[in-house]
Every structure is written in C-alpha cells, then in structure tokens.
Length: 362
Image 1 (cartoon, rainbow, N blue to C red):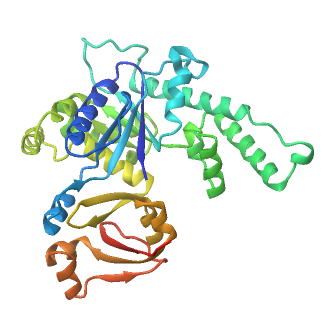
Image 2 (image 1 turned 90 degrees about the vertical axis):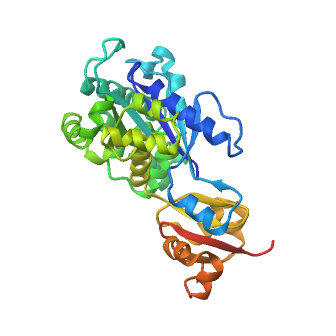
Image 3 (image 1 turned 90 degrees about the horizontal axis):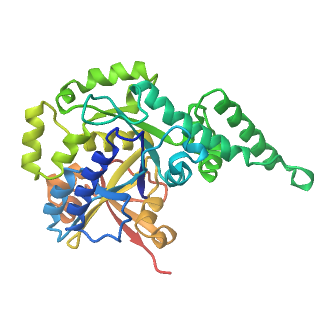
C-alpha cells in the first residue's frame, strides 16, 4: 500500500523548508533504488528502519528496498481557500488522494520570516481547519436527496449520513471526530472528505527547543485542544540540515541537541500508529524488502500487496519472527531450529514477520 501524506499550512510556517529536506532524502533514495518519475510537488522517502540492513546482511541480499512514504506538498493555503482564494481549490484537490494530513503550524520566532496571514499558533491552526471544513461542506452540499425510484434503503441511509455530517461541520466539528461505521468510512473515502482523514499537527519549533519536545507537545495539546498523540514536534530547519549528512554525522548532531530521533522518524512512527500500520519483510539473495500493511491484514492480503495475483493464488506462507531469523542466521538454520511456521489463509501477520509466500499457478 502507498502511504501518502498531504502537507498543509499557512504560507511561511516552514512547509517548504520541511519539504526541501524530504526532497534531499528522495534524491538520496533515488541514487540507490529505481523509482518512477516524481512530480515536483511529491517527494518519496524511505521509512526509517534499523532492522532492514540486518536482514539484508543475514541473507546476503544484493539490494535493500525500504518501505516508502509519499509526501505531497500543498502550496500555502490562505483564508478563503475553499472559495478558491490563492488557487485554493487546486491545492485542496491535491490533498484528497492522500492517506492523512500533516498540518504544519509555526511555533518559533524569526523576525526575518514574514508570517503571512499568521496570527498565533491557535488562530493559524483554526484558519486551515476551517478551510478544510468548508471544502467538505461544499462537497456534501452537492449531494442530492434521493427521490422517486432512487429511494432505496441504501440511498436513504447514505442521505441520512450526509445530513449528519453537514450538521457536524456546521457545528465546527470535523467528521473524523464522529464514531464512523465501516460503511461510513467507505462513503467518506468515496467523497474524498478532508476532515474525515486522520491528521497530525507538526509544531515547527527552533532547533534548541527540540530537547523540550515532550513539554511543548503537552502545552500545545491544551492550546489546540488536541490529544498529544496527534502532535509531533519538529524543526524543519534541522530536518533540512540533517538531510545533507550521513548516518554517523546525523546521529552525532542529534546527540549534541539532546534528542535521539529526527523529526521525520518520529513523524513516520506517529503516522504508523495513527493509521494502524505495520511492516513485514521478505528476504532473499536478490533483495531484502520492507512492506507496509494495515494491522489485522491476513497472509493472502499481504501477498496481494506484493502482487495482486499473489492474493488470488495464495497457498500458504512460511513465517519467521525477525528476532529468530536474525539470531539463527536465515531461512535454513531457522527451519532446522523449528522456528519456521506454515501459515494459511486465516493467519494475521504480526509486526516484523519475515515471510515467504507460496503461490499456485493460474
């Protein structure tokens, strides 16, 4: 599955700085792994994974292919975007296809950077949130009440759901704040509703503030009236500086600042948690690779992430935990130690499973 993030925020809050850092990482990734041409406003970067190199070394893989995350840079939104101000309609359309929204809010002071349209973090956050709500309201207002032979139980339920969502938006609430049924989630996805998407707020702070990230997150949780798990504290400027360093230099720099992870690493971890994602691995002489799936994914569904035919012709899966695979030295010694399991169609993949799928013929 493709994990994509729509980056939104007012102009001059640090979005471009953060995205430039991501583009640097994309260029580094493209130097080692083949990817299709990427649009200028899209950056694809690897998911940080310390286990994947260990896996590659264990099986002597010729290539490492990490899971990736796609960032879509939405040009700075302004008040009135939902009505087209600042080409808002075009930019809002770009967000509709993303998995979740990363809302960048400026929480640093710099007299050299003009805060266009910006007042304070709370007002800034509410400005963008309102535009997303207005955009959803416009989408819902295009829906029509079923009449005549269109009146069916399904269509009536759909219309009632639309009405419920309109009432929620009119009250200033996001659709994701409601407890949606699976059917309603599918409808929200069909309509590409923006406030139904999960959201993470990135507080863009000064480098020196990162050491106080936990306290800052708790403070802004109250200011923005959001749960702490929906907030990640980053320094876009630092991310841009880190993008040009090698692994050792990056670790040293972070240590000097008193932090153990980059903002990107914390952001991706938070995205995985928020969206209920996990990784599994495939490993062989050709490549060691990480794949992203939803928690609760069955073995055939996971096989389908690799290739759609794999799900259709799935027979069984050979599975080993990452820890056993590494400690024992790969497929053969793990099998000899009785640590390889044969799993069928009902098996739910666990985090960090190393898997080999047995596929039948057409």
